[in-house]
Image 1 (cartoon, rainbow, N blue to C red):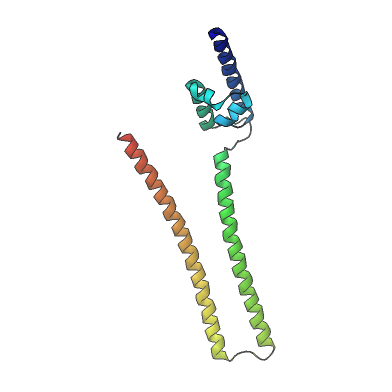
Image 2: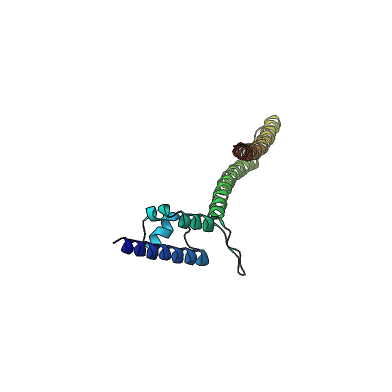
Length: 169
């Protein structure tokens, strides 16, 4: 009975290694769950066999070897997606702002062309308000950029502090 268990364990061990090498070669799912599912074993089997677990973690963190074309990791694709979504949100807000300004400008032009336009002193104040609003938008954009830079610097600082703390242990 013990011999049969050892044989079964060895067969499962070989299946996991085969699935892992295929996943590395083909760029498949390099997670414990994905490898366990593909090999038809329990995740607990992988956690009981530390050598297999180490192989999976090593394969997942090792950059793929490029054969003629560069491959990207899941983390880099997720980061690119997050950046694209954030940029899309900023551009959408900017488009809305520009549409509002254009609408206002066209309305004012139609008002002036109709002969019912406001006196010149009000026009001067309107131009000044527009100039100040544009300046405010520029400053808000600068503030957002600096806030993002500050967040990145803080994250780097936390990471450096964490690595220094771990190095002293």
